[in-house]
Image (cartoon, rainbow, N blue to C red):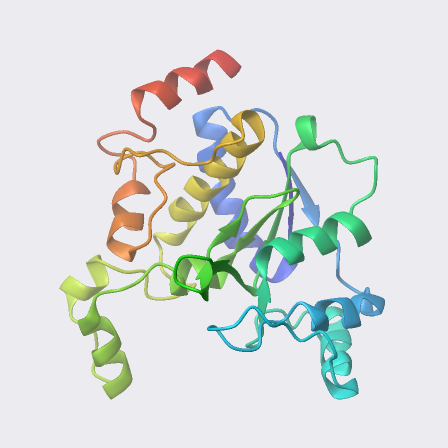
Length: 244
Protein backbone atom coordinates (compact mmCIF):
# COMPACT_ATOMS: atom_id res chain seq x y z
CA UNK A 1 0.00 0.00 0.00
CA UNK A 2 1.06 3.58 -0.57
CA UNK A 3 0.06 5.60 2.47
CA UNK A 4 -0.08 9.39 2.25
CA UNK A 5 -0.14 11.23 5.55
CA UNK A 6 0.51 14.44 7.43
CA UNK A 7 4.01 14.85 8.88
CA UNK A 8 2.46 16.19 12.08
CA UNK A 9 1.11 12.69 12.84
CA UNK A 10 3.97 10.65 11.42
CA UNK A 11 4.93 8.97 14.70
CA UNK A 12 1.39 7.73 15.31
CA UNK A 13 1.11 6.45 11.75
CA UNK A 14 4.54 4.84 11.69
CA UNK A 15 3.66 3.03 14.92
CA UNK A 16 0.58 1.61 13.24
CA UNK A 17 2.62 0.41 10.27
CA UNK A 18 4.67 -1.88 12.51
CA UNK A 19 1.54 -4.00 12.93
CA UNK A 20 1.03 -4.26 9.16
CA UNK A 21 4.62 -5.39 8.71
CA UNK A 22 4.14 -7.99 11.45
CA UNK A 23 0.97 -9.27 9.80
CA UNK A 24 2.68 -9.56 6.42
CA UNK A 25 0.57 -7.07 4.46
CA UNK A 26 2.90 -6.85 1.46
CA UNK A 27 5.01 -3.77 0.79
CA UNK A 28 4.09 -0.49 2.44
CA UNK A 29 5.31 2.86 1.13
CA UNK A 30 4.80 5.92 3.35
CA UNK A 31 4.47 9.10 1.31
CA UNK A 32 4.15 12.83 2.13
CA UNK A 33 0.81 14.61 2.18
CA UNK A 34 -0.30 15.14 -1.44
CA UNK A 35 -2.36 18.27 -0.73
CA UNK A 36 0.16 20.23 1.33
CA UNK A 37 0.96 23.59 -0.23
CA UNK A 38 -1.78 23.25 -2.85
CA UNK A 39 -3.90 26.32 -2.00
CA UNK A 40 -5.40 26.22 -5.49
CA UNK A 41 -7.62 23.40 -4.17
CA UNK A 42 -9.15 25.72 -1.56
CA UNK A 43 -12.39 26.34 -3.43
CA UNK A 44 -12.76 22.64 -4.23
CA UNK A 45 -12.60 21.72 -0.55
CA UNK A 46 -14.89 24.57 0.47
CA UNK A 47 -17.60 23.26 -1.87
CA UNK A 48 -17.66 19.74 -0.37
CA UNK A 49 -18.24 20.87 3.20
CA UNK A 50 -21.44 19.63 4.79
CA UNK A 51 -23.77 22.35 6.03
CA UNK A 52 -26.15 20.53 8.38
CA UNK A 53 -26.27 16.82 9.25
CA UNK A 54 -29.94 16.50 8.31
CA UNK A 55 -29.58 17.69 4.71
CA UNK A 56 -27.60 16.54 1.69
CA UNK A 57 -27.05 20.17 0.74
CA UNK A 58 -23.38 21.08 0.55
CA UNK A 59 -21.53 24.37 0.59
CA UNK A 60 -21.68 24.67 -3.21
CA UNK A 61 -21.38 28.48 -3.26
CA UNK A 62 -18.70 29.20 -0.66
CA UNK A 63 -18.02 32.71 0.55
CA UNK A 64 -14.62 34.23 -0.28
CA UNK A 65 -13.63 34.00 3.40
CA UNK A 66 -14.43 30.27 3.38
CA UNK A 67 -12.23 29.75 0.34
CA UNK A 68 -9.45 31.76 2.00
CA UNK A 69 -9.72 29.58 5.09
CA UNK A 70 -9.29 26.44 2.98
CA UNK A 71 -6.33 27.97 1.19
CA UNK A 72 -4.66 28.77 4.54
CA UNK A 73 -5.44 25.27 5.77
CA UNK A 74 -3.73 23.69 2.79
CA UNK A 75 -0.72 26.00 3.06
CA UNK A 76 -0.19 25.77 6.82
CA UNK A 77 -1.24 22.17 7.64
CA UNK A 78 -4.42 23.18 9.47
CA UNK A 79 -6.50 20.10 8.67
CA UNK A 80 -9.05 19.11 11.28
CA UNK A 81 -10.09 22.61 12.33
CA UNK A 82 -13.79 21.90 12.55
CA UNK A 83 -15.08 21.51 9.02
CA UNK A 84 -16.81 18.27 8.03
CA UNK A 85 -16.47 17.11 4.44
CA UNK A 86 -18.47 14.70 2.32
CA UNK A 87 -16.19 11.64 2.37
CA UNK A 88 -16.99 10.19 -1.08
CA UNK A 89 -16.55 13.65 -2.66
CA UNK A 90 -13.30 14.13 -0.72
CA UNK A 91 -12.01 10.93 -2.31
CA UNK A 92 -13.32 12.00 -5.73
CA UNK A 93 -11.55 15.35 -5.37
CA UNK A 94 -8.22 13.68 -4.62
CA UNK A 95 -8.73 11.24 -7.46
CA UNK A 96 -9.39 13.98 -9.96
CA UNK A 97 -7.13 16.78 -8.79
CA UNK A 98 -4.21 15.31 -6.86
CA UNK A 99 -3.42 11.72 -7.73
CA UNK A 100 -2.11 11.13 -11.22
CA UNK A 101 -2.22 8.21 -13.60
CA UNK A 102 1.12 6.90 -12.35
CA UNK A 103 -0.61 5.70 -9.17
CA UNK A 104 -1.76 2.13 -9.64
CA UNK A 105 -4.93 1.38 -7.70
CA UNK A 106 -4.29 -2.38 -7.76
CA UNK A 107 -0.60 -2.57 -6.92
CA UNK A 108 -0.05 0.58 -4.84
CA UNK A 109 -3.45 0.70 -3.10
CA UNK A 110 -3.36 4.43 -2.20
CA UNK A 111 -4.62 5.46 1.23
CA UNK A 112 -4.85 9.07 2.38
CA UNK A 113 -4.79 9.63 6.15
CA UNK A 114 -6.09 13.02 7.23
CA UNK A 115 -6.92 15.06 10.30
CA UNK A 116 -10.08 16.27 8.55
CA UNK A 117 -13.53 15.07 9.56
CA UNK A 118 -15.38 13.12 6.87
CA UNK A 119 -19.00 12.03 6.71
CA UNK A 120 -21.36 10.14 4.43
CA UNK A 121 -25.10 10.50 3.97
CA UNK A 122 -27.24 7.70 5.36
CA UNK A 123 -30.21 7.31 3.03
CA UNK A 124 -32.21 5.34 5.59
CA UNK A 125 -31.85 7.95 8.32
CA UNK A 126 -31.72 10.91 5.91
CA UNK A 127 -28.71 12.50 7.60
CA UNK A 128 -24.94 12.70 7.49
CA UNK A 129 -22.89 10.60 9.90
CA UNK A 130 -19.23 11.01 10.74
CA UNK A 131 -17.07 8.16 9.45
CA UNK A 132 -13.60 6.96 10.28
CA UNK A 133 -13.02 5.95 6.65
CA UNK A 134 -14.35 6.25 3.13
CA UNK A 135 -13.60 3.16 1.07
CA UNK A 136 -13.22 4.49 -2.43
CA UNK A 137 -10.33 5.33 -4.75
CA UNK A 138 -8.30 6.45 -2.87
CA UNK A 139 -9.34 5.25 0.57
CA UNK A 140 -9.66 8.16 3.01
CA UNK A 141 -9.02 7.56 6.71
CA UNK A 142 -9.89 10.26 9.23
CA UNK A 143 -7.84 10.19 12.44
CA UNK A 144 -10.34 12.27 14.47
CA UNK A 145 -13.09 10.17 12.89
CA UNK A 146 -11.76 7.14 14.74
CA UNK A 147 -12.36 9.05 17.96
CA UNK A 148 -15.65 10.76 17.15
CA UNK A 149 -17.50 8.59 14.60
CA UNK A 150 -18.18 5.36 16.55
CA UNK A 151 -20.67 6.14 19.31
CA UNK A 152 -19.59 6.13 22.96
CA UNK A 153 -21.63 5.18 26.02
CA UNK A 154 -24.15 7.85 27.04
CA UNK A 155 -22.30 8.30 30.32
CA UNK A 156 -19.18 9.31 28.40
CA UNK A 157 -20.91 12.33 26.83
CA UNK A 158 -22.48 13.34 30.15
CA UNK A 159 -19.17 13.21 31.98
CA UNK A 160 -17.37 15.10 29.21
CA UNK A 161 -20.09 17.76 29.00
CA UNK A 162 -19.96 18.35 32.76
CA UNK A 163 -16.18 18.33 32.90
CA UNK A 164 -16.14 15.28 35.15
CA UNK A 165 -13.01 13.07 34.93
CA UNK A 166 -13.74 9.82 33.12
CA UNK A 167 -13.62 6.76 35.33
CA UNK A 168 -11.66 3.73 34.20
CA UNK A 169 -14.66 1.75 32.95
CA UNK A 170 -15.57 4.50 30.48
CA UNK A 171 -11.98 4.72 29.30
CA UNK A 172 -11.97 0.99 28.62
CA UNK A 173 -14.94 1.31 26.27
CA UNK A 174 -13.86 4.33 24.22
CA UNK A 175 -10.80 5.99 22.74
CA UNK A 176 -10.09 9.16 24.68
CA UNK A 177 -8.16 11.15 22.07
CA UNK A 178 -5.32 11.16 19.56
CA UNK A 179 -2.85 10.49 22.36
CA UNK A 180 -4.60 7.25 23.37
CA UNK A 181 -1.98 4.47 23.34
CA UNK A 182 -4.48 2.09 21.72
CA UNK A 183 -4.82 4.26 18.63
CA UNK A 184 -1.89 2.82 16.59
CA UNK A 185 -3.43 -0.66 16.80
CA UNK A 186 -6.88 0.69 15.89
CA UNK A 187 -5.45 2.56 12.90
CA UNK A 188 -3.58 -0.58 11.82
CA UNK A 189 -6.86 -2.49 11.76
CA UNK A 190 -8.51 0.17 9.61
CA UNK A 191 -5.53 0.12 7.25
CA UNK A 192 -6.05 -3.64 7.08
CA UNK A 193 -9.64 -2.94 6.06
CA UNK A 194 -8.30 -0.69 3.30
CA UNK A 195 -6.00 -3.47 2.09
CA UNK A 196 -8.90 -5.93 1.90
CA UNK A 197 -11.00 -3.32 0.11
CA UNK A 198 -8.43 -3.11 -2.65
CA UNK A 199 -7.97 -6.87 -2.78
CA UNK A 200 -11.59 -8.00 -2.63
CA UNK A 201 -13.84 -4.95 -2.94
CA UNK A 202 -15.19 -5.57 0.58
CA UNK A 203 -13.38 -4.11 3.62
CA UNK A 204 -15.69 -5.61 6.25
CA UNK A 205 -16.45 -8.82 8.11
CA UNK A 206 -19.45 -9.85 10.18
CA UNK A 207 -17.25 -11.45 12.88
CA UNK A 208 -17.17 -8.96 15.79
CA UNK A 209 -13.69 -10.16 16.81
CA UNK A 210 -12.17 -9.73 13.34
CA UNK A 211 -10.22 -6.54 12.61
CA UNK A 212 -12.44 -6.07 9.55
CA UNK A 213 -15.59 -5.69 11.65
CA UNK A 214 -17.51 -2.52 10.73
CA UNK A 215 -17.87 -1.02 14.20
CA UNK A 216 -20.48 1.65 14.89
CA UNK A 217 -19.77 1.79 18.64
CA UNK A 218 -16.46 2.52 20.31
CA UNK A 219 -16.70 -0.61 22.44
CA UNK A 220 -17.10 -2.70 19.27
CA UNK A 221 -14.19 -0.91 17.60
CA UNK A 222 -11.90 -1.62 20.55
CA UNK A 223 -13.02 -5.24 20.77
CA UNK A 224 -12.30 -5.83 17.08
CA UNK A 225 -9.00 -3.92 17.02
CA UNK A 226 -6.91 -6.06 19.30
CA UNK A 227 -4.72 -9.12 18.81
CA UNK A 228 -6.88 -11.57 20.78
CA UNK A 229 -8.60 -13.90 20.29
CA UNK A 230 -7.18 -13.27 16.79
CA UNK A 231 -6.34 -10.44 14.40
CA UNK A 232 -8.44 -11.82 11.54
CA UNK A 233 -11.16 -14.44 11.42
CA UNK A 234 -10.24 -17.78 9.89
CA UNK A 235 -11.50 -16.97 6.39
CA UNK A 236 -9.75 -13.60 6.14
CA UNK A 237 -6.60 -14.96 7.76
CA UNK A 238 -6.40 -17.68 5.11
CA UNK A 239 -6.90 -15.11 2.36
CA UNK A 240 -4.05 -12.94 3.71
CA UNK A 241 -1.71 -15.95 3.97
CA UNK A 242 -2.42 -16.90 0.35
CA UNK A 243 -1.38 -13.39 -0.68
CA UNK A 244 1.94 -13.43 1.18
